[in-house]
Length: 243
Image 1 (cartoon, rainbow, N blue to C red):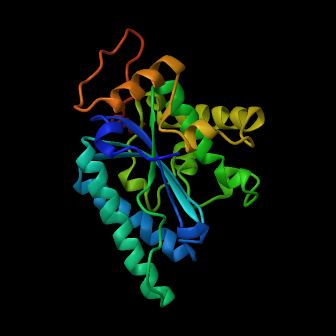
Image 2 (image 1 turned 45 degrees about the vertical axis):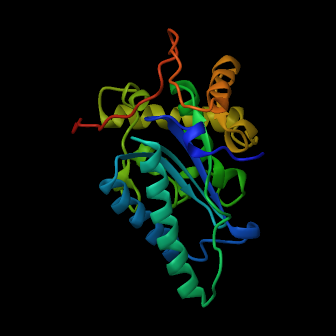
Image 3 (image 1 turned 30 degrees about the vertical axis):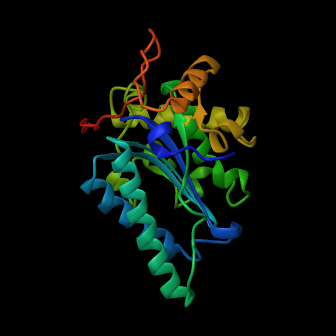
């Protein structure tokens, strides 16, 4: 699918599913050290920018993030800096030159909390679908263990818990238990199935909402569309509960 210009596709505070693939399908993370350094860069750069990171999953030849920038410029700047750092480090380590990633990342805008939750569960199931592990809890390079067990590590410093996750329970432990149940149910129901709408289309949501966003993208000058009742965009907020 042809890519849209960022200023046509994205609006301020959109929640996005971002995918960056290796050039010609090649690996862009040859070792755990590369994955760890990439996530540490994300921690640093996200804290400096107007940018919320909700979820991530780093595979060998691509990576996934669910994110929410304050502006289109914040989005472009963060990923340009993040991927430039990684490419320089990767080329130096591998004694190579040239492109590492397949151009700029592909972006899918997510409609609301229902689709937001599905997107996060889909990311967490990625290494299971790929046959790397039998369950996401055994995979180090995704954010599942942070949401399911409260574990910290590279990349989790930048994470902001979405509102729908905070509503899962009154305390950290209740939310974590609820998230584990949600994920296991998702894995049994559809976790092994691909979800093309989330990975190969510009928008992930209901048909009417997708059509409205497509119409907006075709406009020569950006004009915000009215938000119908019940179409509130998803948000994230810092989780301050210490219980």
